[in-house]
Image 1 (spheres, chains in turn orange, green):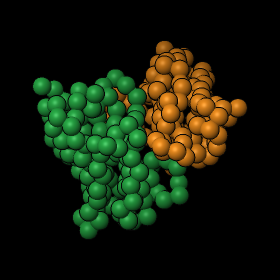
Image 2: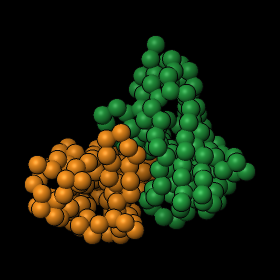
Image 3: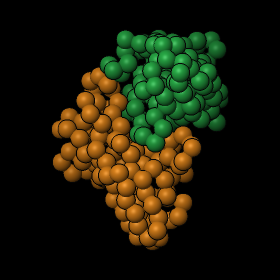
Length: 111
Length: 118
């Protein structure tokens, strides 16, 4: 199975909203609740951002939200801040080997 | 606070075996799957494999023939061994935790860069 597909890069100005899509085959993103998102700063480990479709761990801003359409999950970051500049990855449980699929990652630039 | 701390050899020659260990501090070892995830320089994340507290493993098909993940529950650590490495195995390797019956990785190790070069 191929990785999930994400745009390589997105950008936005402070205060704006951006959306990062995560698409796959019909089975890759079939269950929204099996999709998670991770934020990664350069040289750092990924950090859980969204789990079980729409839930945020304690400490994650409500500026981060997720929606689903067809075979895609989309992460929206509203009210962009400079600290949001990072790489973002989606991940889905695939039910077959490999069990876990990651998107190729999206580099967010805050202009 | 849960912490995953990992270590292992950072420079290998082709055909050697990659060995990494991840120790778990501040939390239970049982009730979780313990995963390895890697990231080639400048590239995205790739799931390598996982093991649960009972020793049951799941491996990525592309690595299965060379991969062994094991655990020492008494010491709260788990290990990755990848044999016959090539330059394509050069990556930052992360250990990560997933609670049983959940579908996300909630804690990650700091990462360990492994370079394969002759």
